Image (cartoon, rainbow, N blue to C red; front, side):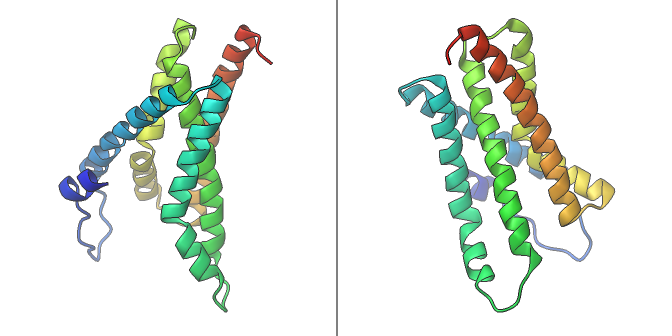
Length: 180
């Protein structure tokens, strides 16, 4: 966070909407260090692969929820007037949970030596799609004018596709290991 705040400060808000592709690309590239940190964390977690994925994914999702969504949800949902933004925050937290579990599974798959060679590029591409998700969301929202519920629906579809492909590869590997 310190590196992001130092080298990639937020641009000043202007009246016209702008798309900062280079800045968002650089921020997403810095997110690759999160993937490296998660990989190192998963190396230190003792136990089977399923537990590593569950602990790392749920831990990351919980930390992200506590630092970005809990206080706005707690303060705003207790207000007298109802606002849909709090429902959207809740849905976004669930979408993020699926994303972080998928990222943890992909990192575990990447570190496996018994993963079939044809799945290695797929895992790499999915990790890049996960890391560069904010850039993709910004491009899609700017290009198609998506906002609010439509953008949330796109996030859900995007994350579900990544999660489904990851689950397919993960189940295939676990079946070959014959551990139930």
